Image (cartoon, rainbow, N blue to C red; front, side, top):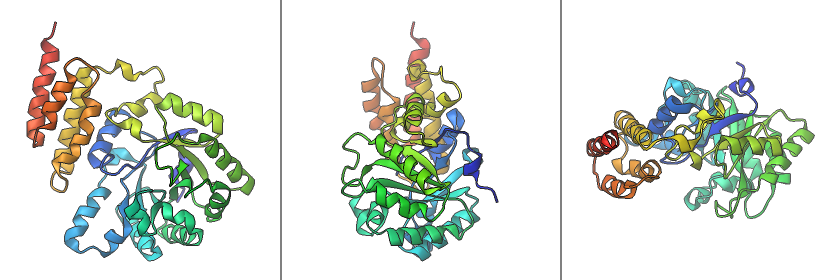
Length: 329
C-alpha cells in the first residue's frame, strides 16, 4: 500500500499532537475551518493500551477517536517496550488510522523516567527496535523527536534513526534540556536535511518549533529546504490557521469577535458530543483565553466563562455575548 506521506504537497503543513489540546473535538473543529495536510492524535501510552484493564482502556482509547474529515490522521504512541509498540500499532491499523508516530521527544520528567520520549535519544539501539516493531503493523511510520538530550546530538542521533528507513521524522528543534524555554534552532533543521541527503535516505524531514503562522512556515521551508512544517501552539483559539495555506491573503486580524465566539461555541458542542463522557469539562477552559480576547470587554467575559461549570452554562453565556455584538451600533 502506498504511503500517504508520498502523496502530500511540498511543502506540507501538519498539526502537532498536544496533550489535552488537540483532542478529537478540537481536531474535528480544525478540520471544518481549515484542515492541515496531516493531523496527529494526542500522544497515548502504548503500555496503557496494551496492559490497562478494560475499564481504564476506555479512557485511553478516547484519544484514538477521529473523524473521516481529519484524514490523513496519524496515531501517536509512546513506550520503551517494543512488544507494546507493536501491539498498539496493530490496534491503530485495525481502527483505520493512516499512520503511526512514535514520540521520542517528550521532555516531561514522568515520561522520561519510563525511558520513553526524549530519553530514547540516549538509547538509539532501543529507539531503532521500537521503529522496527511499529513497522510490523503495515502502516506508514514516523517519529517525532528533538535534536538532543542535554546538548545538540543531531549528527549522531539522526543517522541512527534514518538507518531504519521509515517515512518521516519530525524534528522539534530544541534539546530535551531546553524544553521550550529558548528559541527553536531552525539551523538544526537545515542540518537535518543535509544529513538526510548525505545518507541517501528518502525519509521526509519535518521542522517544528516556534512557528507563528503559515507564512512563517513557508519562510522556514525556504531557509532550511525541509519537506514540511508542523505547527503547534499557533492553533490555540485559531482553527483558521491552516486555511492560510490555501488562501495566503487570509489574515488572523480579519477574524471578528463574533467569529471567535461562534468557533468556541462549535468547539464546546463537539466536546459535548465526543468527549463529555470521558473528559472533565475543565479541560475546555484552557482554550477560553485564546478565543475570548482582543476586544473591549473580552477580559470580563472570559472571567465569567471561566466560572462556568458545564458546556450548557458556557454556551448560554456565549449566546448572550454573541447577541451583544449583533445589537451594538
